Amino acid sequence: MEMVTIPGTDLEVSRIALGTWAIGGWMWGGTDEKTSIDTIHAALDKGVNLIDTAPVYGFGRSEEIVGRALKQYGRRTQIHISTKAGLAWQDGKVSRNSLPARIGEEVEASLKRLQTDVIDIYFIHWPDPKVPFEDTAGVMERLKKQGKIRACGVSNFSPDQMDVFRQAVDLHLCQPPYNIFERDIEDNILPYCKRNSIALMTYGALCRGLLSGKMTSDRDFSGDDLRNYDPKFQAPRFDHYLTAASRIEQLARERYQRTLLAAAVRWVLDMGAAIAIWGGRRPEQMDPIEDIAGWQIDGAFKSAVDAILAETIPDPVGPEFMAPPAR
Ligand SMILES: NC(=O)c1ccc[n+]([C@@H]2O[C@H](COP(=O)([O-])OP(=O)(O)OC[C@H]3O[C@@H](n4cnc5c(N)ncnc54)[C@H](OP(=O)(O)O)[C@@H]3O)[C@@H](O)[C@H]2O)c1
Image (tube, rainbow, N blue to C red; front, side, top):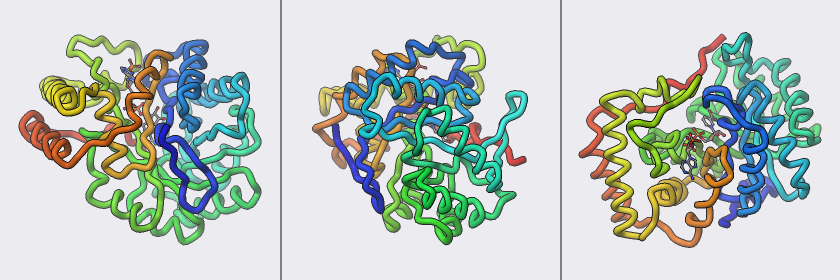
C-alpha cells in the first residue's frame, strides 16, 4: 500500500481511503450491517488505514457501523477515521449548518457513534454561506486544542473560501470530487492545494460506479439510490459515459494489462490527489485494492483519455446535483 504523510501533521495514511456513504444506506438503496462491517475489515486487511464517513451518511448509521467495525477489529491507533460536520437534517431533508454551536454538538455525537475519543481528520462537509468561515474555522481550532480532532479539512470549498477559512486555523486537507469524468478541480483547487501544502483527499474515484468496469445500461437502481436522478445516469448521457468507460477500459488493458477500475483510481492518484476515496459496501469490492499499487500512468495515457472524453461525451455534466441547499 502506498502511504502519504498529511503535511503539518504526523498522520501517515494509505493513499486509498474507504468511503462509507453507501454503508449508511441513505441515497444508496439501503444497507446491510454485517456485509458493511466485513467490507471495512476487508479494506483494512488489504492495507487501507483511512476510513471516510460523515454523520449525514444514513443520519448516523454509517458512523455507527464504522465505530462497531473498528471496535471489533482493534488496532485503533493504527487506523485513521475522517468524518465531517456542517450538515443538518430533519425528516430526511438535509441543509447546510456550520454554526459554531451545531459543530460543537456534532463532534460529541460523532465521537460517541464512532466509539472513539479523537477524530483523526475532521472536515466541514459543505461551505455554509450563512456563517462567516472564520467563525467555523475558529471552532475547528478550538477542537484541535482540546484534542478532539487531529487534522482539519474542508470539503467542497473553493480556493477563495479556503483563503478565508485559513485565517483562523491551519488547513491540512481538502476533499473535493475528482475522477476521470469530473475534473473541475484541475483549474483551481488542485493548483491551490499544491501551492499551499494542503493534502487533496478526493472523492468519487469511480464516479458512482461508472468507472468500476461493472456498470451496464440495464443496471437497476433500487429505492432511494441517487443514480435514479444523477444526470450522468439518464439517457442519452448514460450511454455516452458508458461508451467512454468502455474505451478507457480497452486502453488500460492494451497499455498496462490493467482493469478500468485500477486505471481510474491510479489516474486520480497520478494526477495529483494525495488520497483517493473509493466507495464500497461489499467485501469483494475491496479485492482490486492490490491492483492499484506499484505502477503509474504516463502522459500518453492521460492524453489518450482526454481524446476519448472529447470524442464520446458531447454534453458533459458535473456532480453539482449532490450539493445540499443552504438553510
Ligand atoms: N465530501 C463529500 O461531499 C462527498 C460526496 C460524495 C462522496 N464522498 C465520499 O467519497 C466516497 C466515495 O464516493 P462515492 O461513494 O460517490 O463513489 P465512488 O467511489 O465513485 O463509487 C462507488 C461505486 O462504485 C462501485 N464499486 C466500488 N467498488 C467496486 C468494485 N470493486 N467493483 C464494482 N463496482 C464497485 C459501487 O457499486 P455498487 O453500487 O454496486 O455498490 C458504488 O456504486 C463516499 O463513500 C464518501 O465517503 C464525499
